[in-house]
Image (cartoon, rainbow, N blue to C red; front, side, top):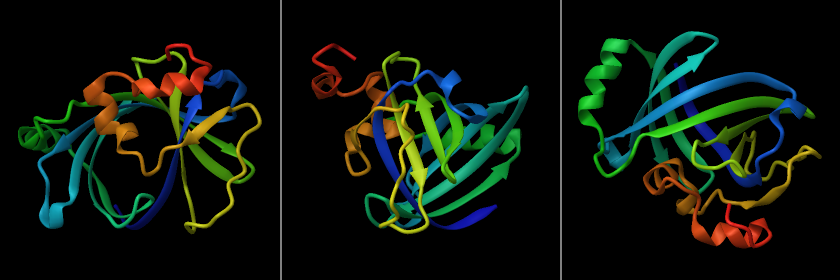
Amino acid sequence: MSKGLEIERKFLVELPDVKRLDVKRRIGITQTYLSRGRNDSQRRVRRIAENGDVTYTYTEKVFLSPITREENEFEISREEYNRLLGQTDKTCAPVEKVRYCFNYHDQLFELDTYPFSEKLAIMELELRSPDQKIDFPDNIHVLREVSSDKKYSNAALASAGAFPKETAVYCGGEEC
């Protein structure tokens, strides 16, 4: 179980060649949002597939700022996962993504790739403090920070089934 403060920044990036990253983990994630909890908290369940094993987690978050949130997360059984799916928020499509976790200069990055894009991804980094300096990998082209842009949240991306249209401006005018 993890409980505490999460400080995280998110970046829209051009999808790199993952073979050129120091990937430590490759994780298949199905993320389903549930109806809101107490204090308007965001609740979700995840089905996590890694190396042939499947685990399930429940997470509850209260957003304090665009990059800071209180988070309570713990593993649950498959039966509890299936039971909680009965509380699915019907306004949010489930999120399907593959997450690549890799280290770069003592920082653990998470690169989320989505089945609807072969050119773009979201890269996240959990920080020790909001003003922590980030050392980006040389072989990843960061297009812009999207930490506070709700159009790039997992829920918005899954519902749209695509990255926002204005993203094309950041991809050299090509449709991403």
